[in-house]
Image: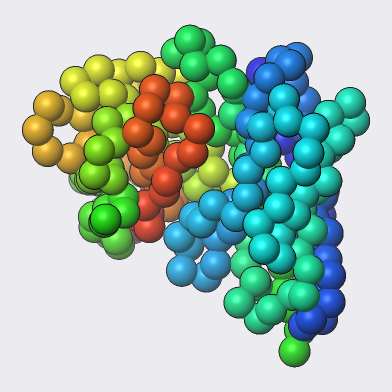
Length: 120
Length: 114
């Protein structure tokens, strides 16, 4: 079974600065997807960024980028030019690539989350 | 294009009562996933359904919990004889394809058992 670990329960950053959130995972699969979701106080789960394991290039979405290290099974999220609206709980998640594995391939496995505070 | 809809947003039940949580997937999506988030924890997978079929229920508690996704209407997560430990946020997500790459989440239903 896959596991996802976020070792930083809380992080803080000054507005306009850069912060990196860590995520490691354990899997025996070679192909999979990785995601970062954001959960603001409204509790709505919002997709921030996704990465396909077979792609070597790190995904980027505006101010959000990832550092994907497949051999190290590491998937960190970098937020540049932090804004007050970035304050939220951030969850790292894993999903198998093989959709033929109907019994387990479709589920998302989440880490425990990192609470990000942005200071003005 | 409306997103995933869940209702009610908040539900209070006394111990022993039944709770019914509803989820309407995004338009064009026929795959639904339910997750539970206990206080101060991450989301945990419960069940994956397609129309009229349960595909993977390995995350569902063996007793009191059931889920369905009928041909017509929303998906329903049913919890019978609720206990205080069932208090949590229940999230529904949907995808267009089987094992669709991206799951889109609803706003969740917060269940409080008194």
